[in-house]
Image 1 (cartoon, rainbow, N blue to C red):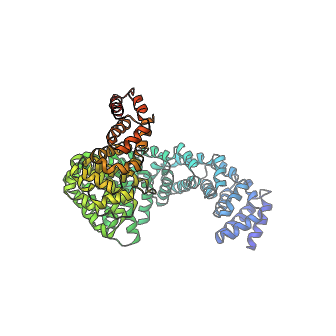
Image 2 (tube, rainbow, N blue to C red):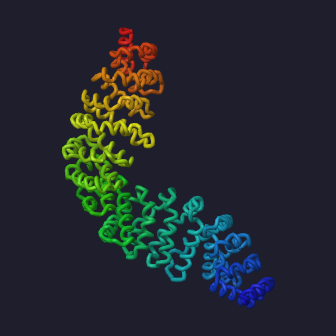
Image 3 (cartoon, rainbow, N blue to C red):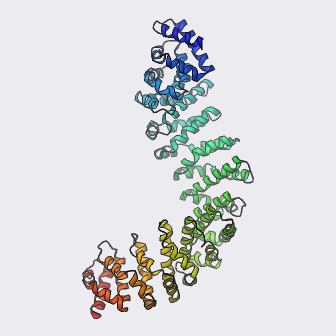
Length: 607
């Protein structure tokens, strides 16, 4: 270190005159000390106030300049030195050096700027202010076709500098996107794919930029999909594949890029990864299997990419994904079920899948998980069944296959996501299926659980779906037994509350169910109607100008239906319904105005 102190003293003196030889030997000594113990040497350089002397040495014409830039690059490897470099005024002269034509000057300057920007707000701001990113981006644009080793080294440094400059900073990333760096980097990747260091730097840059929504459009206009798939096919190492996966995942969120990736052959690569890792026990195999199967499911979220892979249900990809469901591997079972749920996004696909026996595979999978209880698999399989049950022609087939019975095995689940999907699946199944609605509506355990979930205030989705299923059981069965089962189970008050929901569809479903309860067993429901303030709820719905026409219509139907009950009739009289209803005779909706006339007649006749 004594040599270093001596060299620093000499450098202080030498920097005032321009004795190049003595400066050069001092710089060599500094570089040697930094190579030996970077942190210690950097502290010494800082203590002796050397950094503010360096701007004068950063002279484009001087032979010392690359060494000075190299020293700055080495010093800036230390976090505590980065803001010091900025304060010492090093950024403007470094940026000036970017206009040099000397390869070594550009290389060391790029390193210095890149290191100063690394994780340093001050460094990035200073480079931004001096317009450094724009110059580096221009260099990359003019150099990217040159494949000489020295040039590739420079490109690697420049890409690294832009990456450090913009990492985790949305506004600087947006700035690079606006400069048009994405198309250049994609071309660069294609030309230099043989160069590992440069390729990795490109991938990291893509990973950063792809997180930004505004980048997706630019990526979609390049051949990034082909380049990444080509690169992926060459890789044998886990780490390299992971790097590519990290770029693919954010890019594949864009529907157009999803399709491009499918057309470029990514799916075949992913299926190969799954086949190679499914029986692996190493951590990296398990990680790759998860990443590949998750990405596969993500590609199926795009309508066009999904339909392309479905190929009318005959596609080899679709068949391979089907084979994941009976797998012994939970991750593959999960991906298989999620993939089916994604394929089941239009009626044609759903009908084909039910006709080719997929329901049985899903039921067997669910049966395996009643005891094993993997919540994510349960949730995914129920999602798939719910989607498959949407087309009317599938409902009776799925009920005959025993779907309702298997789904009911999960009634005891305490996991809200499973509860939510279970409710949605049953609701889809009984839509227009009177016999099934009757069977389920008289199942005491189901009704009891629904009433319990109607109070699940912490889980709005479960609460909403429970109310909707309770209403659906009545609406589709139109059965006195089901009505009685719901009254006995304490469900009436929840349907009255549902009529005040902010969602019109739920209000309407509640009113129709309450109308059926009143029509089929008013005597048994009377006490609950009174206790839940049904009449005042209906008064509010009819008085509220925001209520939709069908809400007003069904509220009046319900008023007429409950007038046969003495206590309810008294409440109707006390709330002066006739005023509200007579106003509705002038309603612009003909159905509402007609029902208002009929309701007014009933109210007048029975007052």
